[in-house]
Image (cartoon, rainbow, N blue to C red; front, side, top):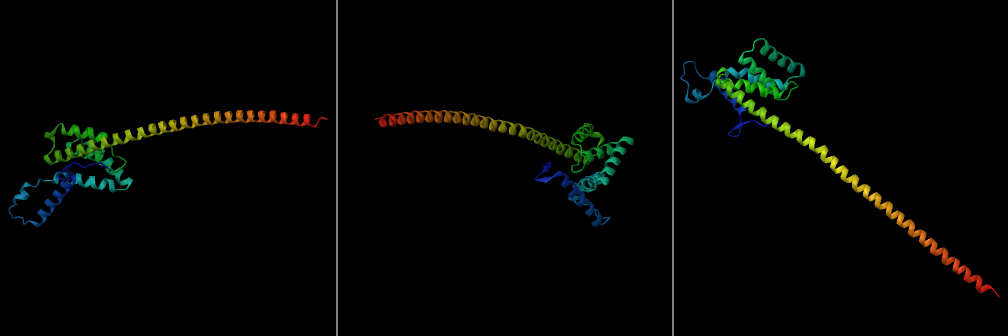
Length: 210
């Protein structure tokens, strides 16, 4: 599960959503003629990214057909009308995990390109793009680590299997040697027994001669 970039322990994207919610609720409850309080003045205007945050929330929850429709719409808008907003929407679509069209590598490249031209983004768009870029980079690091672990596990298993096979082969060879030695020992015992029986039989025959 990807790690979220956090501010004071709260995921930044979640913080943005909370601020958006607070801003919207404040706009509904505050009288039109009322003077904004200090906290309201300090709250950033998240309306430019409200639709983006909603898209990022809805996309992983939709069925495959709905997901494909959202992805296609973002791709078409970015291609036909390549504005910064449309390019950001496509980048965030690719960056959002939990759907078949998620592409963190492409998202990383596009977000980095957008942030390379910060003057083309609104402050809140820059914040969102920066947060998602850091999250995508963290996800790619984790994916690379997972691939490394998966690649090492088979090699480790092969090494363990080779060690077991070597030990089994050595034990088999030792058993063959011991069996051969046992057969030779039994053959010697049989020979000695045969000789002793022959001597005893000869002695008995000699004793019976008048």
